[in-house]
Image (cartoon, rainbow, N blue to C red):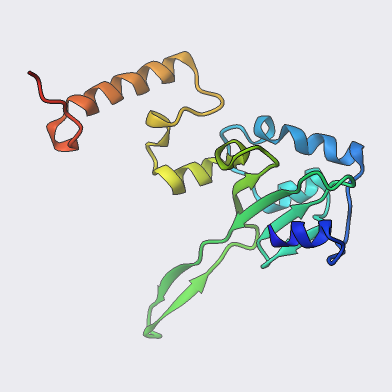
Length: 165
């Protein structure tokens, strides 16, 4: 966010500024992401090289009119694996990390946040679809989620049961 402000004030130059034709696809990111996983390489293939990369993981796309940047957060979660016979762990990361979320210009935080499937699982767990319907939720899945929410609300171990008067 500071980079966006510094650029707007003229203190920061970026490698690439997108003209209106290049920027147009970035205005439809919610439909493009939908409920799927996306790798960093796919973002760069579809939208071209970013204007700026922050911390080797956040791709920034800058429109020529400087109305608001798009930030693509590529989360490379390091995992450790024990190395038999060496008595130590080896840290492993993906060469092409998954996109966790995308921030687009919007009036508030929630409206500007687009979570990928990976981002939804990280934020709400594997049962994310029960309380946070996806973009591509079918009527059948919505009905199943509603039934699961009803079961959960009647389960005293969930601490959400209302006392009957």
